[in-house]
Length: 175
Length: 192
Image (cartoon, one colour):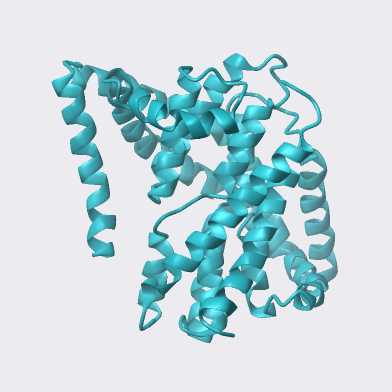
């Protein structure tokens, strides 16, 4: 059922929007073309910000700096009950979406998806986004340089998702 | 802040690379990331054009305005400075709806459109407004109803019940969004 919904959602959305437009006498074809033009300009505008962020993340990971950060933070997170196996996911996920998925796959393969670690990792992954990259391209696209309190607030939210995942999973599934 | 974080990611990366003798990997990562950015952007052009085209139709037909109106009791509370019939509201609502349905690719162009509209209301054009900060925190804490990608990975790694995490993820994401909203409101010291 869920599989059907996730495969049907886009075609249905397409049909519903276009039908409403057609009934309301919108010139659907012309209008669609006009909107599609923005796709190119938006992608070009975002490109330098995306590149700048991805290069820094790539270097940070490849050098082994991320592993050191994990070693330092591991015991700290252990104190509040976060299994150290999910820590790489918790740290990488705000940085990189594809990296997060790769690590999740790795965790689920090594510890089985139905283990406590597997469930916590899945829950975490299902409850957060890639913060750094999102902020860089959203603010970059309109030329905002001062993000003010966005990053700290987003990181606090991300941290609370991590804690919530551990607490909820041990509550629902038992540790 | 972003300048500091970005600088230290690269500086520490290179220094650790020297210590670990992994400079070759660092070089490779820099090149690969640059190539990845190009690859991603080319992919974005297609997907974003598709969604922005569809959204234009949704906008012209009044569909977006209709949804924005239904949700206005909530959105007015979260974004008090944004006029309720401003195009920014419609774009933000559609972005959140796309995120909830797990359509990340559709959510981004809508979110960027929302930012463009919010920028029109912004006084200092290089400084984020309160509405922008709030919107982005909601966006990054992503309320997602069905985490389809995670379910797919669980399925492929042999879970006997791949969808069992829908409930827990929904609670976790709701908590993180609420915490995010509270933090963003507490941390904002100035109007705008």
